[in-house]
Image (cartoon, rainbow, N blue to C red; front, top):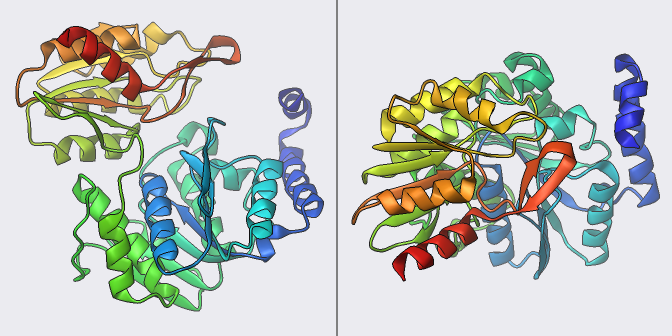
Length: 388
């Protein structure tokens, strides 16, 4: 029904349609976003990890906290998976969650804020106390029309949050985001002197930790409490998650943008056997060639496979990625078979790196069909079979 409405409504009225949905959702649930301290985390990569680490700091400091990410919904100690295949839920689902957090007497809500969500006014009628920028690299270009418009969409979170802005000073877009007024502006990056001992793999996760640290400090939480929370924090499911340790490592990560993929590969010094694909449905076709180039640069062996093709022909997507992935790149349509082949090729001391889906529970194919899936579970099943 929603899709039909969107097709029938002229483009210039579609924004009003989304705005009114946001308004009615807020009215229905009594504007719960005004009754919490809401921390919005935006950026191309790292949002889920920053949400998770920030929530850990707030909890360590004794605050009852709710959080919402692409991985899970959490209110206090109760949590359940986000199976929506949508990082930022629609207006009514989001407002309902906010209402649940208020009813549970939460003081804080930490929320992933996406450019698509902002485009559809899902951030409306929520009083953001704090806005956090992780980084900004090209994504959703077809949807927004240009990188500049993508950046402008992200900026609307900073225009909505008048109190505290926390920005990655190393990001090329930092100066752009610093122009928006706020009572307090905090920076973090390579010049930040605080040292953290994190359990998370990768330099990029260290910066995610610094972002969460700045959120904690901005809320008046003692540095020692922030550090203790971060050092205790476990990794996010499907984000640089080591599924197998011996005789070779198998790492599953959500990386699906060129910047994220390169950082994942740079974080692993072992000989790499890499399994990757690219999302379909007409999404960010420009990046397919670049993903292939990055895999060819860093990986000893490259296997290109299926990854949420939606209504596109999956083998055509695979071919587009493989064109730039080197002559030895292997094309395997069946994702389970691709994972099995990578495990068979791995030798002692190698790292098998499987990217694109992380802990996502579905494989999205033609006709809106969803197939139950979990890269981590498939790895364990295939590894057990090969080891027997």
